[in-house]
Length: 327
Image 1 (tube, rainbow, N blue to C red):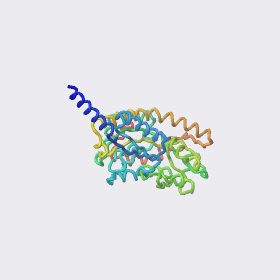
Image 2: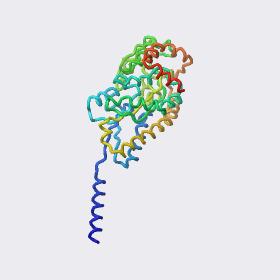
Image 3: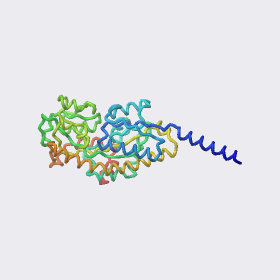
Image 4: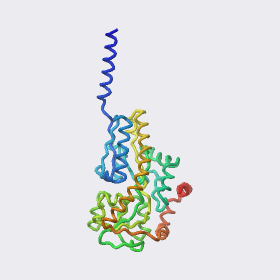
């Protein structure tokens, strides 16, 4: 009997050591913004929750500040079969040009009347359909979030006080066709510049202005070279995180369940974080001497963009109206 007990103990110890020595699965998470931004903090919360809920068997390695490239470069890397990136935090409309046309509806100017309006959508069954849209690309949606309304900001040598002052200015945009259309509607010249090159483009006059959520504007030090912030709130900075199917399939059922629970918790965390962080940063900017211009003629901005709104929602008119009606 003693020999049997000793054998059982030895087996238990051996199995325990094997489990302890098993290497955790490391998933690389791409983030274009610094860690102290709303999206960076959201990524860190997700990391903490995944590692906690999997007891350290899954590690999230966040590569922030665009070290893995712009959102488009990250997507191109993933979709070309690269295996260096497992999870990416994207602007919700980034997948539009990759065969996910519904995603475009989230970037239509003046769609969301408020944060509450966006969260009514993000927490709905309809949002789950949107998250599932890139499945044909080998991507699985994890969670939605937001980083505040996006506003225009302008170089130190440019005087802007209203919509009429945008005429002829070079405004940096991503490759998103909706954003290009909106800037054109406002009388400015849309100029595509990679986000990682935006600071120098503002500094050297390649562009006269750009647009970002307030927290990103400050965290990326843009006030140093573009100290006028115009609060037009043209779109809400909707975001989503996606994981590759290759990475997903590396996980066992318990780890997959933990990832989804971490995603649910992260979405709720982001909702609380974003509003508080944005208000805090705006007060800091004002205290530091940033010129903050309030928009008092919101209808003029909306009316100027009607062409882009109507042309980009025509194919999904009913679906778009459903989102609009969620306010």
